Image (cartoon, rainbow, N blue to C red; front, side, top):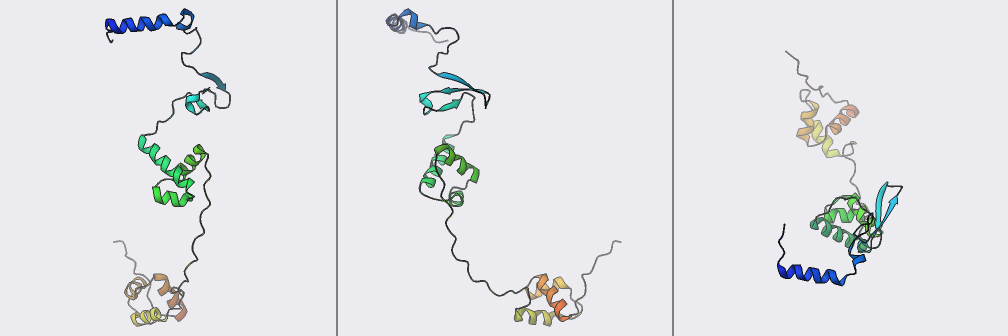
Length: 184
């Protein structure tokens, strides 16, 4: 317990003498805080209207307290939303989840812009697995000797096993099945 000096005690007594007696005590059943308490039947909690909380209704339950770094990141996200960035752009820029971006937008009353149209897709090369690539077909034909398996030919030709399988079926090549290891 702190010990009051004589000067501090005298200043407190003088301040109390200036306040009328009926205003010095808080009546029973009334909070010393200057707040209106309202029961919210939907959330089953006491809520208050207090001008310190932006004048809105807030729950009196203690919620999670955000760290200063989290509050700073939320402000940066809000500024990105105001700048017109989409959710995917903000998520990549700030390394954060979509849910957080949506929460910040909802809390600040902001509208997230629609994603920008992606650039035209690049023209695709011809299909190589389908058998249209003659160079791969020549490599596979050179490697077929009746002893090499499908996986080995694919590895040596530098292509996928499906490409070798497709040419084997189309051209009727003699490629043995995979050698199965027998349990001893």
